[in-house]
Length: 328
Ligand code: PMV
Image (cartoon, rainbow, N blue to C red; front, side):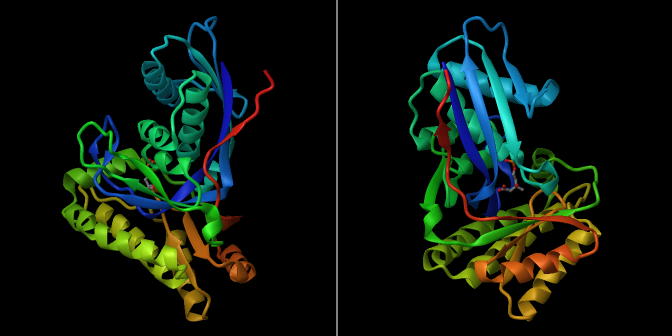
């Protein structure tokens, strides 16, 4: 009873920001992301009657504490679904530089969901898998699919209609994403805490929610038409709206550092020179820059030259989950 799966991380162009149910992980708005080829997690899960508890090894380190608990809680859902009381050994390898500010939880929970359900003998289609993955980490439900994917928030209270759907496959459009890594480390407000504080206290939150349907409809038009300026403009503006909600929260907070703003200004300056490039930022200080293949060199060297930028990692559009062959 062993299976191995690989899943890539994703970056949201229309952000998931706000939960309406924290236990089932049900969002207040639909979100849309692009799956990234460069950053992924490979996870093997073995269920065995001999095991007396779940174990979790990440990059050859045995994990305890909160990180372990999240994995064990997720395995409880898988066991429940399969109707089997059997423990698992989970081994993951992350090719997601945590310093790059990617939610490695996205590729992590997508790979865990795919490998664990296969290993325990469940036969889920990608919709069912996405719905289950959502309960490990919200943004992870989009990583089941490659290319562009949309997470439908759903209307029901039980979460059965809240899962991601594919928008276009990876082959549809070759856009690129540069992950700009900044030197400074600051104490982070987790996405969970940041969302909660914003939903509970920010007067800007309703404005954010109200603006989503138009952003979504327009960005999808842009993706289908491969209109890079349109997609970039909407993604950048949507990211700014998400971050604006945090400034209205009580107590107010921001994920940005001085270098975050410098990178944003540099991206705007690139546009003034005629190079189409757009930024987006998640719940952290690092910036992701969207650009086209023909501008790779210029974009990369410009970003690398910004003082305070320690690394720039490039990625293409990636595929959805894949299953790897097991030796045993
Ligand atoms: O799923 P989480 O808890 O990692 O939240 C992700 C939230 C953002 O990265 C800020 C936006 C998104 O849609 O990925």
